[in-house]
Length: 252
Image (cartoon, rainbow, N blue to C red; front, side, top):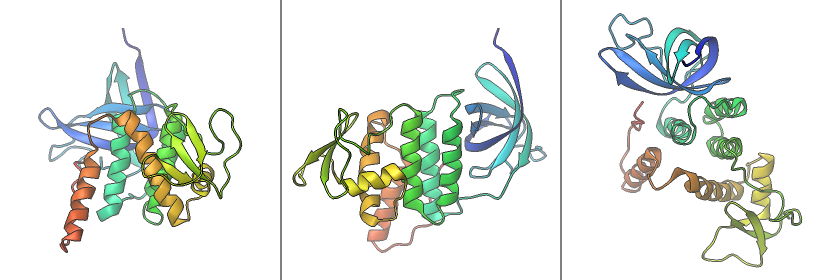
């Protein structure tokens, strides 16, 4: 028989919610001490539901639930701060964070460090979106056991030099090269070190960190494309055509 777990006022974020049965919601949440958890919010869609309108993404919450087996039942909710991610690209970026977690995290696998990184990323999107995204991606890979080697060459080689070029071999690390190649993932040492130290205040470092993180994540995401990237491509196409797109629908 599965153990019965009772959780009281756990810091959490709603990653996604789906209609469930007649008037309920099925929530996917990220909690600090319990990781990703699936919860049923009974009656949350009914006109008089006790949590109607409160179970929104990008809103820091304190949640209580009872769990027996795979799914739990929501029993309590309190707010613990103002909501983040207002609209436009900021909202799309926040949806991207959630989609990564839903695709790569298994349920009931705690990652307190990743929870902190998620909170920092959501709050950082308003002022420094690119660094916020890249640092979260780096933390996510590290927490999943796929951390990137950024400060030294492969096979315990010499430290990365900021004024050198490196070809990054995924699942191994950087190898020094003499010039940029048309093929391969070639990055400046300064960009690798900026990502290692978590200081992405240079446009070149941001661009190269994005290329590296996208390639690294692709190894674990599989062939199915991320929905948020598809929306971003559509927005970019509209922008290039001179149209003014509205806020993207992230499916939440």
